[in-house]
Amino acid sequence: MPFRLWRSRFIIFTAIGCLILTFAISSGVRVLAQNNSTTPKHLTTVTAQAPNLGRHFKELGLEGSILIYDLNNNRTYEHNPPRNATAMFPGSTFKIFNAMVALETGIIPDDVAVLTWDGIKRPIEEWNHDTNLRQAFKDSTVWFYQVLARRAGYKRMQEFIDQVGYGNRQIGTAEDIDRFWLEGPLQISPKAEIQFLQRLHRNNLPFSQRTMDLVKDIMVREQTPEYTLRGKTGWLNSTKPELGWFVGYLEQNKNVYFFATTMDMRQPSDAPMRIEITRRSFKDLGLL
Image 1 (cartoon, one colour):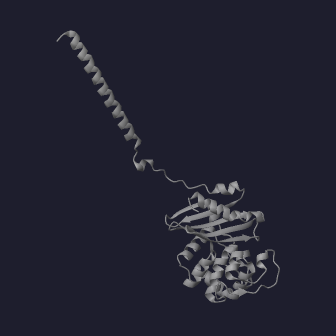
Image 2 (cartoon, one colour):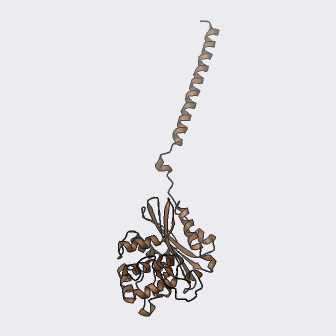
Image 3 (cartoon, rainbow, N blue to C red):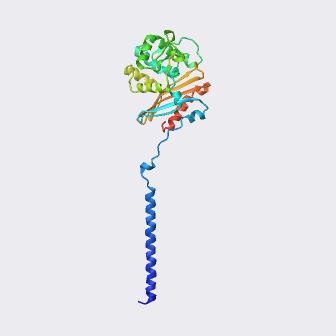
């Protein structure tokens, strides 16, 4: 074979070989890159961080605490743990308990039986009329639930408090029967409120099923196809600083989230913030 022809074929074959090698190398790099980009799921899983619930208090310039308990996952989210473990006067959150005692003892037959207003003008206009258990719960009508406590009496009230193990179990003397939850000596911590609410949800309290079902229905604040929010607010002006409460539980996504929010109340315009902070905290958890 002439040298010139041989050289030409050599150049052609060499060029083709280089092209094949380049293609193979580039293909191999591409495959390797694809394989490296597919990291095992257990390596890419990001551990969920507990949300900073305290930022909502800070943004609103308020002092307080919040505790949320996720039942299905047995997980607690909270801001200000020391305060969540501190016993405080329950205020109107005690209306949950008071309503059950009234229904169980028959001193009021149901949620629509009306008590007559005593005619004493009080600073909250919604309190100045005849009302029933359900509406008084919604309006947080203090005089109505004071009447129920007096009718239940010291002995029966103390017996129920002891059976449930509510708070520090102290209701004072017979003279304190219509104010022991407002001025003491009864106290309960946010953490203990959560435990009480769990027992109510599970129907694990020394009350009839009818009583617990009625009170749970009275507690409903919001109900949509997606969730049900039950709760009760409270506001105590017998403490310094004044104390605000919001307790209850949210049923959503086949789960239950119990909550207890407390807040130092500076002025009447702070009242809605008890609920606002709770709702913001639920949104941090992907709820509501």
